[in-house]
Image (cartoon, rainbow, N blue to C red; front, side):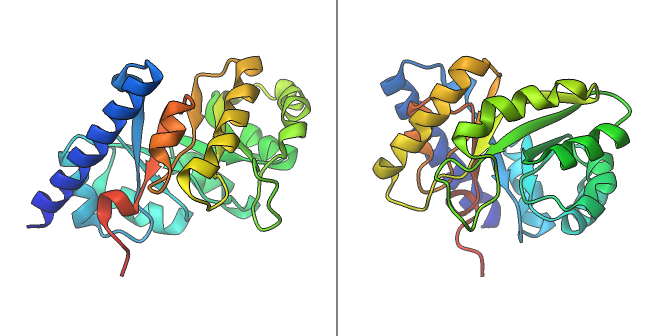
Amino acid sequence: MLYEELTNNLAEIKKNIELSCIKAGKNPDSVKILAATKGQPVEKINSVIANGIKICGENYVKEAENKINEIGNRAEWHFIGHLQSNKVKKAVEIFDCIQTLDSVKLAKKIDDIAEKPFPVLIEVNIGKEKNKFGIKPEGVFSFYDSLNEFHNLNIKGLFCMAPFVPAEQARKYFQLMKQLNSKLCLSELSMGMSNDYFVAIEEDSSMIRIGTALFGERK
């Protein structure tokens, strides 16, 4: 029953991706699905991987380490939470990408630990919310330039969490992310979650992070 439910949820998500891509004139294959697996048991994660999910995202290093040890490299593992300095070494060791780079201090730490260019995304606080981390939109270009001195960072794109508002109201934030990236020309725009991913795709998201719509409400 679990597998069937997850299969149906994923099919619905893919249908919505296709509809959004038709509206935007995009190829549905250009949108990656990241399964946001925080708090999800290994059984469920294995089920979505068996259903074709290729990227899993975790918010906490220790929780992720336990899951990765059990599941292995059947999927890419991306860090999507706020990364503390004392967790960087382990994060670089177990993750394939850190999506939430938000300071020069963190960049230096990753650069010092990584043995080759490590994939990262710059976290943008697109709504300038006090309770969120990330670089404010007006500081993105100078922050990007400040990373030039680090040779072990592979800056793949931008990441954001739009304010929790109705999907259509989130559109302006995704449009601003698109504008920022139009000048940087990075390959990834990680934006859009269960409540607003269809709008994010219309505004050029290349990776949506889906938890509730895939797994259901966490108990």
